[in-house]
Length: 328
Image (cartoon, rainbow, N blue to C red; front, side):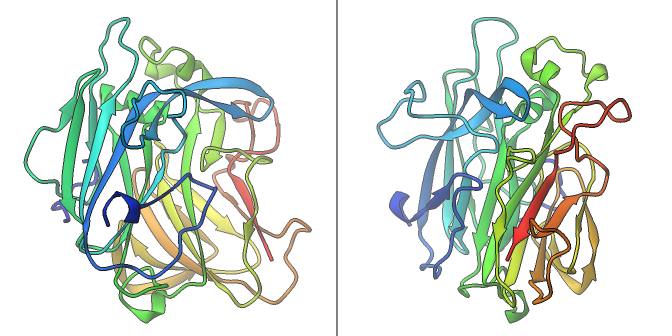
């Protein structure tokens, strides 16, 4: 499954797919099976605090016998969570429904850093579908994305989280030390609304993100993470942005157990942990019985000071951004 040092690059009903932030997937892994999932890469919009809707390109889950043009097939940011079991043979079919009225034409190219796909076509022109197949041999947290248009497609929102569960239920990896009671996938990213309004001709030298997102939302819109005292909370970080991002947890430690779906030989406790751009990390936090440092709960936030909405750094202050609370 793993590609050698490449950082850039069940049946349908038994595949668990949930919109980011709307569900936590639990349950015992089933035996290995063939999994097929259909995605559309298409335009959409998202709402940001104190701002009008912003255009995006995102992935959408496409039910069987449904067209990507159907209004029920809605692009989300990030894309749908894809959850499969260790040993599954997974085929991801991506239909390119990106804009085609004007040049350039956008070619979609699905990649998952750390995954080796079977030989075959890699790209889909507008209106076409590409199928990528791999065996989910290594449990862990992965980033899937389309790296087309020299990174512009990722900047527009074509990314999501892929989770491979081990055969042991209730664990992130094979060792029992990775057992958890509650889990949360946290896809980290950013938006420059000026770029999103004109992705084809915008000069990327002028790119300046002003909204910093967790699962496509900025505080105060980020929903709290529910976990009670004594529970082991698994935090699955997926950094789909272009900056290394340091996430700080106040009032407790997080034990970092894996990076880029590789178990660490020496897990460690941290108040703040940096997730490289394009990387993933898994950390477990045990919820203390002590009172949280905030009436809203235990803050988990971007220590790089990306906790503002819609304002360039140093010019003004509109609190929000990459901040969420763990609520006992």
